[in-house]
Amino acid sequence: QLQLVESGGGLVQPGGSLRLSCTASGFNLDYYSIGWFHQVPGKEREAVSCINSMGGVINYGDSVKGRFTISRDNAKNTVYLQMNSLKPEDTASYYCTATGAGHCSRYYREYDYWGQGTQVTVSS
Image (cartoon, rainbow, N blue to C red):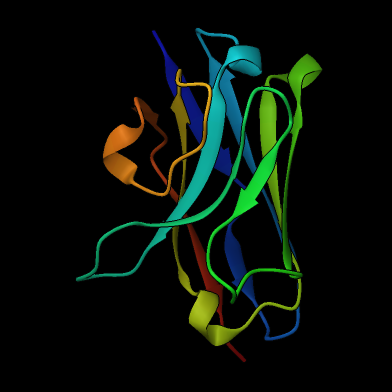
C-alpha cells in the first residue's frame, strides 16, 4: 500500500522552529517530486515548497522564503520541511504530497499521493 506519513507538527511559540518529516512506505520517493502544502479551515490547500527528484527546490509564496527549507534524504525515503522563525500566520495543517511528474507544481490537483496531515500551531 502506497502511503505518506507526516510527523513533527505541534505547538510552538512565535519565532520558534519545527521540522516536519514526510516518510513514504510502499514506494520509493527517489523518483517523485514531493511537495508540502498547508491548509486552514475554509480555504484551499496552498503550496508551500516542493523538491523534485533531482533535488531542485521551489518555494511558493514570499512569506516562507528565507524561513522554510525543504530537503530530502533518499536513503531514509523521507522529505523534510525545516520551518524557522515561525509566525502565527503559519498556523495550519501541513500535508506532504507526491507526484510522479518530473516537475513541481503549486496546484494540489496535480499530485497523486497525500499524507494525512500534521497540525502546526504557532501561538504564545
